[in-house]
Amino acid sequence: MQINRIIALTLVVVCFIAATFGIQRRQTEEALDFQKALNRDRLELVSIDGAISGARTSAAGAMAVRDRLRELIEDESVKGVLLSINSPGGTVGASKELYQAVKDLSEKKPVVVSMLDQATSGGYYAASPATKIYANAGSITGSIGVILNGFNAKDLLDRVGIKSQTIKTGPYKDILSPFRELAEPERQLLQNLLQSTYQEFINDVSKGRKMDLEVVRNLADGRLFTGRQAKENKLIDELGTQDQAIADLRGLARKKFDLPESSELPISRSPASFERLLDQLLSQVNLNVALPFFNLAGSGGSYDSLSGAIANQLTSKLVGQNPQATSFDPPILLMPNLP
Image (cartoon, rainbow, N blue to C red):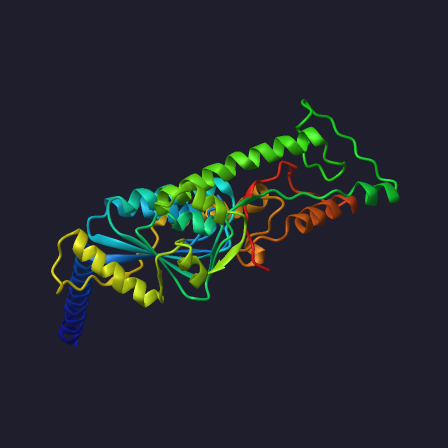
């Protein structure tokens, strides 16, 4: 009886050891296969989805995409990048960051943009330095321009007997305050600021698209274009689906790196690194403090109207709720939005 128990225990231990070694071997083989797949020549799919801002709220957000594009510059296994854009635009700084990352990457390897429903304003800004731009005939793009919104609630507050009290260190510190009229010197200051930003926008589009600056200026009055109209005005290169854009990218990559026609160049989307995932998680925790007037997470990735957002904030103050840390310093937006 004792011998039988020893034999049974020995068999259990042997089976356990065999299973452990088998699992480890399979994991090692899978890891090697995965690494081999990563190291083979391929194409990378990167997506910009939703409003463009400096907040790191998702893998498809502007700053996460900027970081990924920078990584791909040094990734020798990636021979070309498909940048899928579905964005109404957003803030100036984040759009400029994307523009520069796309420009730097396209100098090293082909970058083809595929516009989906819309790639307007900041979305078009980011696309403009790509090697080639595709859009569907009904895609909406353009909207090249800059806007800064505010609202004046002074008459409303006067009716209910609410007076604003402001202490400031300079005459322009409460510029665009909703509690008073905008003075003419303030209006001129803001107009000059927007014109400076607008000039840089059209300069960059002119360089990215290799178009004459005056031609771009004539198109940069805020108007929207369908994909077909954009092609007629040379704002994009081709009309076509994302599959057609991928096929073209594959050809451009083979030509750039002198690869044979037999090279498959499969396209894939790499998983986000742990560092980027952690960065996004921590940024979401602080989102409401960082952007008090914009509920990006709650609006499906698109901007609420500025007036509505500030009105909600103002209402919370008037009814005595605990407001978040706020400032009336407004962001400058590359003209966003389709209703």
